Length: 151
Image (cartoon, rainbow, N blue to C red; front, side):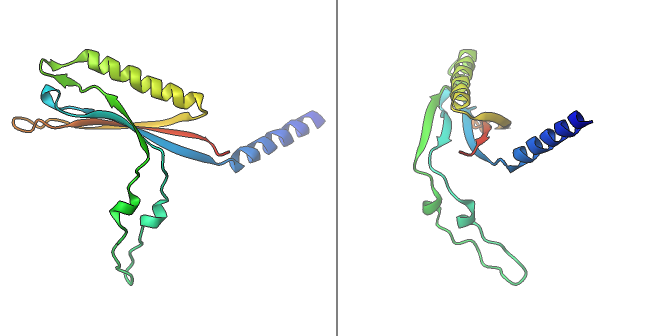
């Protein structure tokens, strides 16, 4: 009976300790061009500067209808890493070698983040593709959301 009680106390203490831990998050974004003839730009973007969203947020209510008047220039991040990727298309059409190259570069970025103590928590992606004749525009965007324990 004592053993069960001791194990229960240890488990409860462990769960309480886990709940007290807080995480920091970092988002890495890859933008891959879906523009014919290789004219688009593709990149991995990683912000080095941080921003507090509260500085650029207003709350609208029935009584308070003030508009958000924060300056876009103040919120713009100037410190970021930009890694070149290859475009999905070239003059000959879709280029599978470019996709494989981008996969290798994105994998390298993910592996580096993991080696720095980050865990890949979520991945989300979206596409705005060519909508037909005369459009010629589109992107494939993926956000990699990492987390790690705050130090």
